[in-house]
Length: 214
Image (cartoon, rainbow, N blue to C red; front, side, top):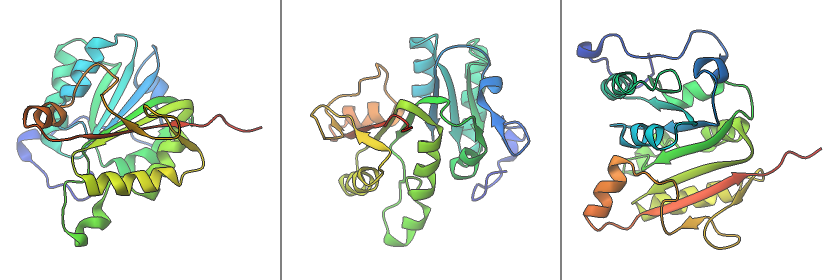
């Protein structure tokens, strides 16, 4: 069970990653096209729509809330998307070190993370150095990391952290910048759709994994 998540007995049998120290994503998601990782898919609108929009992509969502992992993975199964699209119940900070092989992921999506406002909660932030290091390990050359938030202070924190990563390069609308005006992936997350309806500005950042040297 992911740490820091209370059990919900109405969803007693959540979808999980296979046991073991290493999880082979190529085997878990079956054969197909590029692998995409969604950290914190929540109610699952993005994963479900993305799997329908790109039938070649293989998607893994890692969701720390048991209820939504159960609901969204069940909806993917009902839509006939298993095994190439799955959502599992886990804490991404614990799950990513188990995933492999290195360089197997084409895109990582993180939509509106870290919904805590007080300074004492900063230690709970998902986008922090340990997770970013694991994302870089899993991204193949040219692989993309896409982050969006409607909290400007958080966007500044993410931008500083990601700009400091020597293995990443900004890949926004303008050369040398990470910001994107629009979502380039054709589908919206639930929170992104709501932010647009409410007229809230959304900061979108995209980075690419630099080619491996040597």
